[in-house]
Length: 398
Image (cartoon, rainbow, N blue to C red; front, side, top):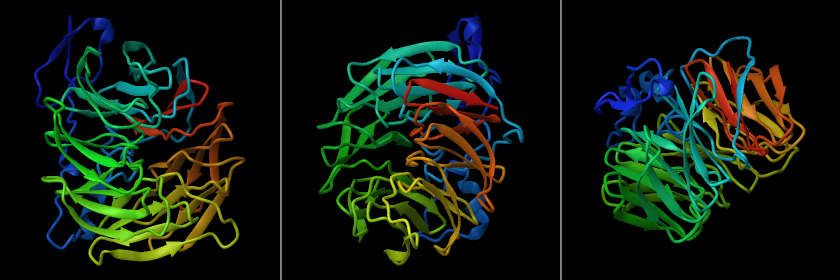
């Protein structure tokens, strides 16, 4: 028998040695995740680096609670395909990677746990409805994911056994985000839900005027969603009360990324917005001078660049002032949310290709032809990149 530690503060779980995940000791929730919001929503520049995802883990959609899509992992300069996993149906859910284990959902209605080293299956959790775009989130030995039947599932990360399930009023495409003893998730029934991680009991729900497709981003006691009701909402996690909202003037399917005191997201009005959290208004709007298409992809943000995919078949690199710096043309819509590590952008396209670009100028550094649309977003940890395709294949590069 081999002991496997899935979190730094939970007792070891016992699994057969074939399930060994190395290294056995790591810190899942470093202080990088514990970013406190001051009363004035002020974040000094020195803390920007703390808004990146730690090198060893990518525990939720976009890597961290601020949804920046940036990893500290040292990805090899030269990539190669390491393994593939056949899920049996389309993968639009983005993977989570924790402690050498990959968690990914598929339209087959399965949440699978795989070995990051070789793609071997540890377990599969089967449900009655497909898993769409909802991406798994890991916290304290539990994996959470939503399905298109409207259920939020809590699953034991070591065994794949059901702990509890919570029923929303409509399908779930939002990804869960765990904050302490609470998990937040949106539903197409127009609510953002806050549920107890321990029991799955409802703590509160916040009503919007449209489907909640957005995954919430977190800063302190506030959750932020870019709503399909054309508003950007700031909701207090402690009690579910809205603190303020800002009109986006457009339907929004993307999730907001937070950097410093700003939120960034694209809209179906062909714009990328920066919302100031201090001034509670739109700070700037970016629109490509020629190509007027919606943005469904969620942005990745660093201290120098905002990167976002568009339905104009392009990947856009913007300055923090909202100016276009570069674009890269693909052959189809880009709905995959870019991930960033070691000065490179990693992103899929519906043209079936996985691209690696220079963060500085958008130059293509490498591409891989998967042969099927890549609308899922990459997950990066331990020097490896995992991304799913709509033909049901999950790829690992490193």
